[in-house]
Image (cartoon, rainbow, N blue to C red; front, side):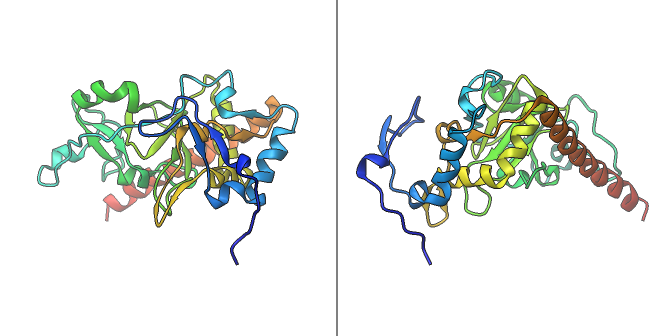
Length: 257
């Protein structure tokens, strides 16, 4: 049964700071999830919790929360060499270290529940990377959020690799000066409280859904001590490291068959 919520018209009003192209700065929001108590209550609870903060207000956030751009891909199926990119693990479990190789390009399908699946990544040329890295380039410890698409929207991962990469326009990038904080925020966004807030701000219907960077910026984060932040970050980081090693080891094993 659908959830029912009765709100005043004034409760639908929402300001957008620095709205994306095509959006008004003042809006009335009629998306059902925006008003349902199950999602509203999480925001209200965290807003009233001492030490909580909204993502856009954290002093350790670098720049603004933004999406990548649609890349011009360099890989061509008929040219096997174009399929390689710097840093990838080849079929023998070895890392490609050719500095002349293409650069990794992540699509929304690469962002899984807590980790980045490089097996589905594509590539862009070094020239394209240099032209777009100011907008779409990502660094180790960046928090990545799938921002479009029914079934993929809301997935969160932290980029845990030293090699350069870009993301497409369906992925939102958050960068922090504090690495542990970045991993903690990534973990929180995957939690029930984080996912409910993401759901609240999803726009659209019939599979054509998205969450804008301006709304991700509104999400409240639960406070924690530095000790707890470091512990969660370490455990999350170790889990991703284990996954990456598993992918490398299984390729090594299969290459000898």
